[in-house]
Length: 444
Image (cartoon, rainbow, N blue to C red; front, side, top):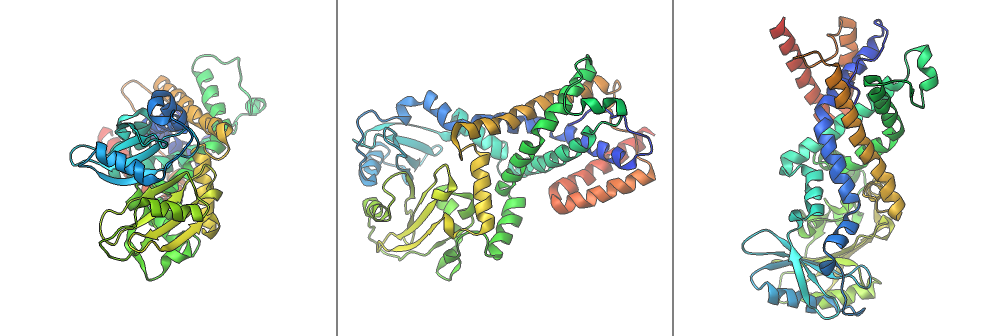
């Protein structure tokens, strides 16, 4: 996010157009990118933070035995008799608690923690009231629901433009500056030094910032939900093919029953179950999963009405271990299963990107690698706003000068390209240009 007019030749029309892009992109995205960077950095260490803040809920001290799910669910039913139980996450490793999701009659949903060896209810919390939960929701939707989701997508698209234009502007325009292309000129002071910080921070973090943006866009409602997911599934390159046949329920997906799921399966329809008054129970499902080689670490959604099924999946740090099972709640039949090998190539790429984006794939090193662009974004926002504030004339926005007709043509070409790649960003830039022209006309 550059905020100072580069030393560009006056006849370099493309350079001037790119600079104008960079200015507006930086000014618009600054506060949002700061929020996304801070909340993203927090969520990278979600397990570590929750372990430190809620050790009495996260760790089981009674032993290494793990009961099947039904005794754990029954203990929660007894503790919260009026709440609906929607899901249980079995312990991922020895010494960890099980987690049961409930929807009380009054009040927000809660997550209840149970000792898996003796079914003792240890306590609960409202996820969004925790530091990690707040950061998670703020990172995805700015706490504004679908509107916030659209804003985050828009800012991510603008962030992409910001990085690409910044790389173009980074290339030194003066021959004397060529020797400082990859390292700072420490002789500079004041505002020029801020510019050095901004320039080199952007240079060395650009690839990782672009990676975060690209791997984050599949979550977005428009770019991911309305474009990438439908296209990949239509091409047979998305979710497993067995979910596309006639006995799947197109009106209900795995994310509807779990609240969260591997991104590939978010839009996958759930197979139909048989209607009946009997329910095989969670222990029967547990045994089915054990027979399939999944003894622990699975997440299981619970039927809420006749015809609903049990859906279980594993969600390890490395997506190659993802496995999904659909089990009829009435008959106990295994009516569908899929693993990572059943995903299409686009779905596999998305899941790999998600695992790396969240810092899960290769442990602490992955977390630290993704922390670097988060910290870099914070530094870029601070340095960029500082440069803009120091440069802008008193009482003025300090936008780049009005473009000549030739430069406007360059800007129009870039705008059209952007609208094809990122419709929200392109539409918003047209709006900004219209407001800018109107403001200049009023002041003229």
